[in-house]
Length: 158
Image 1 (spheres, rainbow, N blue to C red):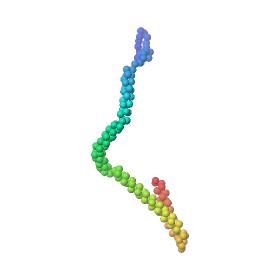
Image 2 (image 1 turned 180 degrees about the horizontal axis):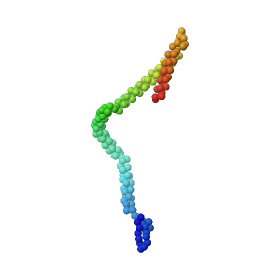
Image 3 (image 1 turned 90 degrees about the horizontal axis):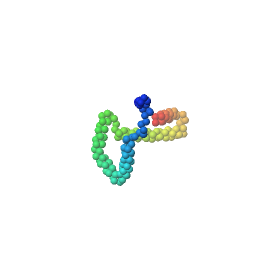
Image 4 (image 1 turned 90 degrees about the vertical axis):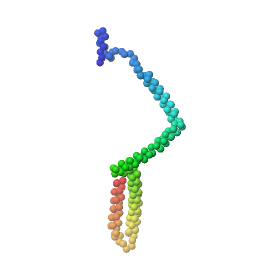
């Protein structure tokens, strides 16, 4: 704390009345705010014109036209780098995903066909003349049990 000795009376900085505080930068802040507000209005009006949209479109078109060779070179370099690290490219991953999807659909088709075959065999088995009801039933039930176990295993992994 700062002390001030005035004629035998000690006064600290807290007791000294500095009067109203003047901020020398207040005028600059006001000018800045008015400038930003007016420039904001001007820019909004300029951006909302058809000419601005056309100019922006032309610049974007030029940019895309000029950047195409660089993008292609970058793609080639990326493919070479991925090859060096034995990593698949995006196209290879997509192709593999499509193949897996195709395999999954084919397995589902085979599964449904197997279900229909088992149902038709179990329905026609007891009605066959001259065959005892227990004969061949064990292999059929084993196949059905195995098929059901595989279905349960496939459902858990999904």
